[in-house]
Structures are given as structure tokens and as C-alpha cells.
Image 1 (cartoon, rainbow, N blue to C red):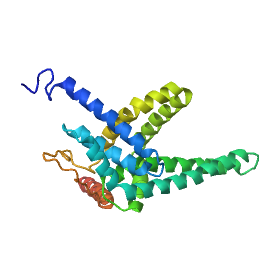
Image 2 (tube, rainbow, N blue to C red):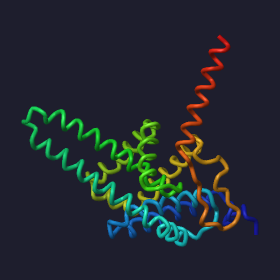
Image 3 (cartoon, rainbow, N blue to C red):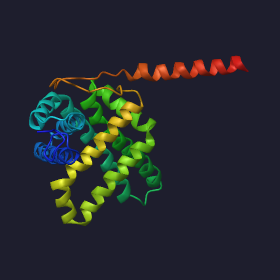
Image 4 (cartoon, one colour):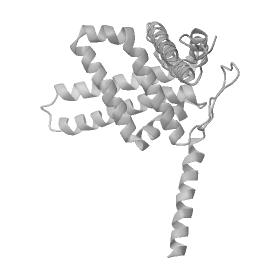
Length: 249
């Protein structure tokens, strides 16, 4: 029987159904493994890696991949989550305290500073877990890279914040939207974000265009990126270009 027939594995409709099923399964796995709360970091890493793998492969093994990567990122992912959670709680308390003490002369300035710091925290949070899932690095370096990449690709970061903010606001307005999001939206939104994070990483040269095209059933591939060298290389190239322009003049 042809692979391109009605039920063939290469049929576009069947592939779309299979991909949607993957989204739903990964979404459910993510929600279940987030229940202990302290495992949210490892769950975010496992979601990213499994969704990334699913988008580039045609075979299954969703459960196996998810839990392999959950275990692989459990230590670092959990520590990153706890660090970000603690810092986020401190910033949130700062904002709350300056709001309730708005009658103080310095309140407006301190509130503005607290909000800016909270935005920096949010931008770091957005990139921290994709970087932890995708690249090998220390926790400190991952958090540093997350903030620097978020700042250097601000339009992308703002778009992600707006998307998540809109989803959160709609869930807040309606319990039906919240229910639909838990049942179907988690996987769909997650896949959309993973797809665009991968496009950004490839566009910036952090990963190769052909990265991840695996022919064997390999679950342990990794990509290492030295951001310092990458940025230095970009600086060197800009200096060379400026020197060339000066010589032409």
C-alpha cells in the first residue's frame, strides 16, 4: 500500500492529524508533570525538547522522549525555575509594596524601577528554558544568555509577552477559555512558540540550518554554543567591514 494513499504515513492530512495528536499528548504530559510545582522548570525543558524533536521527525516515541528529557534537565531546569521563582516573588512584592505606599514621594520612581526589573525578569524567563533545553551551559551562563538574547531580539521577546499576556487575560475572563486552553491550547501554543524559537536560533546562527535532521533514533543529541565567541566574531566582522570602508574612502 502506498505511503501517499488515504492512510499512508506521508499523506499531508494524516501527518497533520499525527502532529496535532503529538501536541495534545505533550500538552497533557506537561500539565501532569507541572503539578508538583517545583518540577515546572524540568517540565518546560522537556516540553521544548520533545516538541522540537516532534516537529523535525516523523516517528513517535513521544512518551519516551518527554521523560528522558525531563530526567535529563531535572536538576538544572529545577534550579533555574526555583531561582527565577524566588527573584520573581521578590520583584512582585516590591511592586505591591510601592503600589500600596503610593502616597510617598519616592513611590513613583521606585515603582517604575521595580516594573523595569520585573520586565527584565520576564524576558529572562522567556528564554531561560528554551536555552536550557537546547544548549549545554552552566546555570549562571544560561540565565545571562537568556537576558542578553531577550534584549538583543526585543521585537521577538515583546511578541511572545503579548501572546502569553493575551492568552492569560482570556483565561482570566472566562473559565471556558481556561478549560479549552488546558485541554487543547497548551500543546498548540507551546508548539507555536517552539517553532518560532527554533527559527530565531537558526536565523541568529546559534544552530545550523540542517541541525537535527537525524536519521537514526538518537535521543541524546546536543548543541553547544559559545555566545561569547559568537558575539566577539560579530564584533570582529563589523570592525573589518569598517576598516574596509575606510580604505575605500
